[in-house]
Each structure stands twice: as structure tokens, then as C-alpha cells.
Image (cartoon, rainbow, N blue to C red; front, side):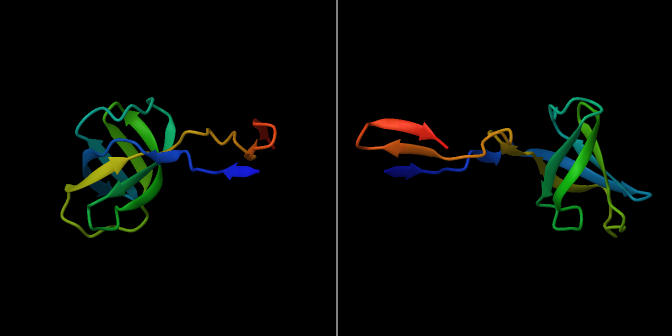
Length: 112
């Protein structure tokens, strides 16, 4: 029996962003369309700002190139500050809950 296992996840494109903070809300203004439907929430990551803006956050799309998220602590940075926005991708859609087994003796796959 052969067991194959691989992660089906990755990261979306890295999009340059400008980050600001006001009254416990961080605003991410992306250089291009982020492709998150307006009004939808998405788990996304800010990186390369070297500040407390960095990290995985649940963000709300407020326009085709703007997202917001709660950031309770003032990052104490001169804003706007540059960073990168990206969305971790899970191509399984959280539907894969098993294993795909290959039986060499019968040359067949089995999903368990």
C-alpha cells in the first residue's frame, strides 16, 4: 500500500499596500484590486511592514482596493507605512477530511 499526502494550500499574489491606523482600525489600501467582494470578510496577511500591522488578520473588504481590520494597539508608526497584502489559499475548501490510498496489488485508489 502506498500513501500519498500533500498540502493543497499556498498563498495568493503579493500586493503592495499602504497601511494606516485610526481609532483601533487598521486600513489596508492595496495598489491593485484585491479581488475580495465588497462586504466580505477574508483571512489575509500583512507582511514586510516591520511593524505591529504584520500578521494574519480577519479583514473586511470596504472597496475594490481597501480592507479594514481591528488593531486595538496604536502601532506608533508614522503612517502611511508600506507593506504587502496576501491571502493564504486553501484549495481543499476544507472539504478534504480523509486519505487517498493506492493499493499496489489491485492498482486501485481508495478514498478513506
